[in-house]
Each structure stands twice: as structure tokens, then as C-alpha cells.
Image 1: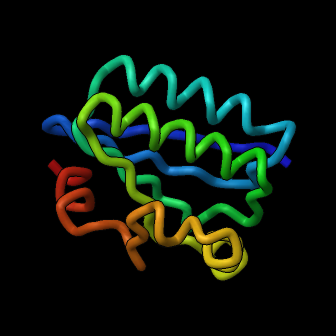
Image 2: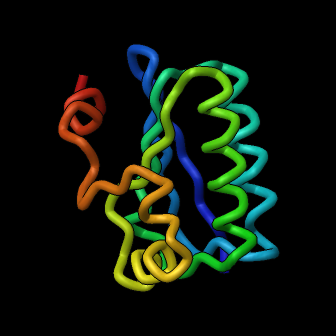
Image 3: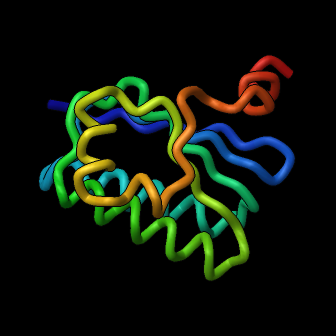
Length: 115
């Protein structure tokens, strides 16, 4: 399965929209997108996971690595709209207490899409 990653930046914030499956084969694509994005130095990154069907431990490690780098830069990385399967992985691993998890993409990110 293919992984699609798109990023929209606005006013020092970024929304990363992921679609597909995050696994051993697709995680490097996501990692390279985070590496590129973090070089731009956004203060806040929200990851829209509403279209992620599956995420294995490799994918979770990519997210954790990005979270660590964001914190080192003084920023935040948040997860939004995880589907039930991804939500369960976050809960079982305890990562739901590591990441800020939103039920949906924060309104300010939706507003910035339209401007």
C-alpha cells in the first residue's frame, strides 16, 4: 500500500496529512518528510491521521523521533483524528499520554487551509 504525505505550512505551524499505511516499507517516506519539515523549523506540527488505516511499531518510532526533534527545537508535535485502529495502538503502547491527541484537526489549522 502506498503512503501519501502532504504538508501545509502557515504562520509558523504545519499540518501534515497522512493517508495509507505506515509500516516498515512506507515509514522511510514519512521520516524523510519530517526531516525536511523540521529543517523549516515550525513551532507546532499537527499530524492529521484520519486517513491512516494502519500504523506499526516502525511508524510509531518515526512519530516519536519527530516528537523528540520538535521538542529539542522548542516546538510541539500533535496527533489529530486517529482512526480506531491507530487510537488503540496509541492506547496500548501508552503513547496517547506522550502525544497530545486531538479527536479532530484543531480549528486554526482548518482555517489556515482556506486562507
